[in-house]
Image (tube, rainbow, N blue to C red; front, side):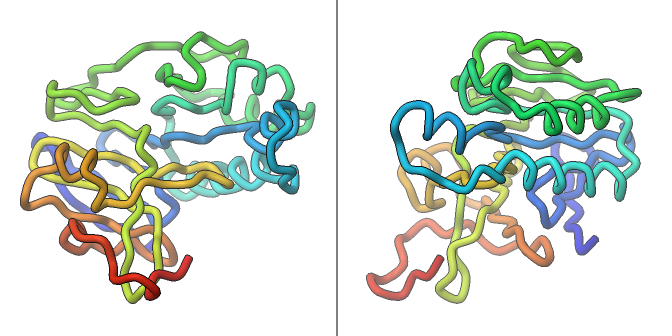
Length: 225
């Protein structure tokens, strides 16, 4: 799977090229910022009209990662739905697909700023979850070691911007897992202020690739998406 192994809080973890986090010792898969229903929400609110395939694309990626890892626990780190109406607006085929993925698994929905209330999909709903040495939540705090999401971090290599994990000795921030999600550059002051000086960016794509977290904006005219 071209994963990258690392430790956080003494726990052995793997970053997957898809942007998911795998904890083999717990048979656990963690994903963040699925933003199911983003295209529908934009259309409903009079925004940009995007092809309505984001939810299916995200579900296919999740299905593949669950099959590959054999995970029996799943943690979704908030903003799983693009707003509170998006869950009810999922097409029936997507709803049944999600329910099939949830069946037989210990599934936890962490509440996010886009979906701050429980949705009618089963599983458990929490503001945060402590599991072993790690705390899982939507937005990073000073309570570490922790795993969070929210910021959709991105970094660039060879002039191309890619979603990435951000990792230091006490904190891991996951990239957005959902299709059609934007991102915040790793050199943004919000992220450079959160992450330690030795932080790594783990790029997603065909393989998970670690490099020192970029803390300076690329030169104008060289960044490609």
